Length: 101
Image (tube, rainbow, N blue to C red; front, top):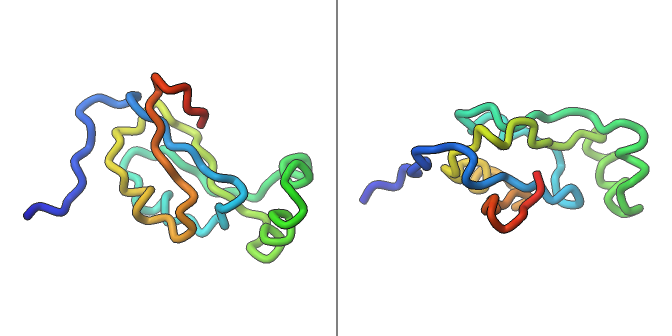
């Protein structure tokens, strides 16, 4: 049985969506994505302040870093990021369903 993910032949059908309350910025998504869809960076002061209090504490513990979708149009829906995320903070949403990246 082939366990390798099958990527969609055309990019842009789905968009990865990150749960910003769950992401700890460990960068596993960045390391496994063959299409450079993600970046991991420190949140700006305004981004940090916009998070709920409990999330701000968790962010502080993890260096205020989170993953961001910077190139959603390049996503081929292989799901490597979803499987790699230790916090289960990534899902793939159909572009037709109005998912935001």
